[in-house]
Structure formats: C-alpha cells, structure tokens
Image 1 (cartoon, rainbow, N blue to C red):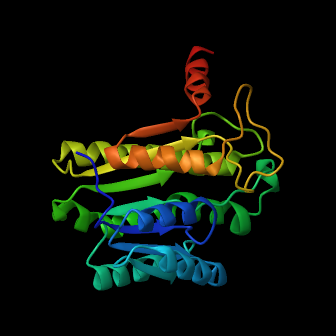
Image 2 (image 1 turned 135 degrees about the vertical axis):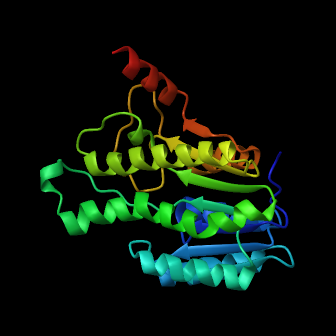
Length: 251
C-alpha cells in the first residue's frame, strides 16, 4: 500500500537546511498533519520552521525542536515530547549526518570517530526505537527512511569512519525491515537510501567515481519521496552504484 502524505505526522532530522529542509517543505506542501523538524542549529531551525509554516496549507502544524543527536538522552526526551504533543509519528526520515575525511589514524576519537558514529548510526537507531512501537500498533501505513550513502557499499579510503557509519546504517535498517515483515508488521516499511555525492556543500571538492555525476538535491529528494511512499526497500542513486556493487562481487 502507498503511504499518503496528507494527514500524516512527520519527524525529519537535520531539517534546518539542505535536503532535510526540502523534505520538510515537501511534507508541508502536500498537506501533512504535523511536520516536526529536529536540528541542533537553533537559529537556522527557527527560521526554517517560520518560513515553512508561513507557506504551508491551512491546518499543517510545523514544530521546530532543537535536538542534539549526539546525545541519547536528548533524543529520548525530544521523542517523548513529540509523542505527548502529537500522538506519535507516521513517517520518520533519519536524514541528519556528518562527515570528516582523512586517514583513520588522523581522526580524533571523541571529536571525529565517536561523533560520526553517534550522529550517523546510533542516533537513527535510538530515534527509531522511540517511535517504532507506536508505528507498529497504529495500523496506519508508516515509513522509516534512512539516508545512508554509497560509501556504505564499497570500501572508501580516507572516508573509513564515515563509510563504517553508513555500512552499519544500511545493515541495521535492512535487518529491521525484514524483522517487521516477518513479525507481521507490514504497515511499517523501511527504505534505505544510498546515494553518491550530492551537490549540497557537504562534499565540496569531492569527485565521484567514473561515470557518476554530482547529483542535484531536488532530483534526489524527488526519488526518495517516491520510494518512501511505496515503501521501496533500497534506493541506490545513480544507476552506477548498482554497477559498483556488481563489480565488487566480481573482483
């Protein structure tokens, strides 16, 4: 079944700017009942929430919440507030992520390794764990979207910790998808997104693999949105990501 955006309750992490903001704008424009924006940047979050609320159709509730995804307690507190205020969540988009390049031994553990793993991998797990019981019991078509990376499919020198965080996210998310299906909670579908480089500023100066273009954010958002609605298990962008997986197996 297709997930209807109109009337649904959304939580989007990393929603103050970039593609997180684009997901929030699209949810509001299509008549979501509630669009909850999580971000650590209060100034940008407040501005984004105001602007989306001003342009949203009547009746759409836009709720900006400052949440530090590197802190488990902050996630649990924010999730409890969402459930108490809005009754739960129908669509969770785990979009927030951080990246730092460099050889592994140059990473500072606390500032780089721990932070990357917490925000990119542990935070989606904790967030999903808080909202999933309500999704499972609601009987509504619910969706969990995990924004991973093609870096989580192929070994990537000078991106070891980032790659590790995305490998873990892909394995965890797809395993949860199978668990939900096997245990009879087919109303909750998990979509894992594994794109290559996107022109958002996060990877300024990076060059993609051979035959792999630098994708535009609006194109990626449109493809993710379509995959989310139908509950597609895996979305790899662009098509060359499929080729890299094939070549990895062959070689």
